Length: 184
Image (cartoon, rainbow, N blue to C red; front, side, top):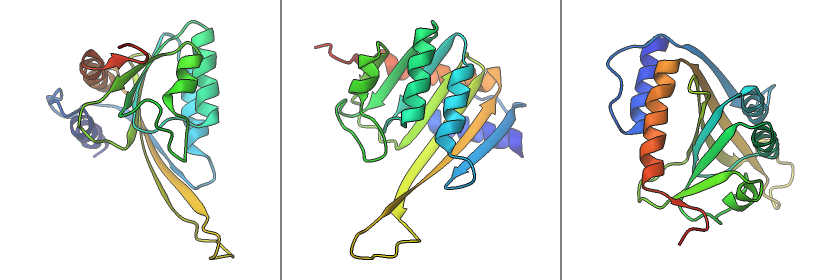
């Protein structure tokens, strides 16, 4: 079941059929709100990266993830990010592209009309992290006149060089049709 899940997720998110069948992978997951904040799980994985980090995202990152990306860049990891849509768009739950570019990280803007609201990371060509996020009214809101929002995030971590290869090829295809932030 886990093998089929990994292959199905790879096919659905990439839009390109790289999978030839079920592939063994170590899969773990996180859901927020919960006992562990998923952004911290993602930041820990970024902290462990040693060579490359490729990210494709619609919204951007938490402060913990930005800190981890900056530290990765400083220790010599090749970090590149593709953002969807307008590079200055800043959703309520994260950073826009400008703070990432200010850290010296290469940011690509993919203006293709393909819509996505997920985040994808490929770390060291061996680990894939997929993440989806939603915001909803908080359940424990004692004052209905002041709406509070609660962010829910689900994260799936797939450890498999083969699966990571599928995602990295998809990332490379999107990067090839994207423009560097600030390029005319």
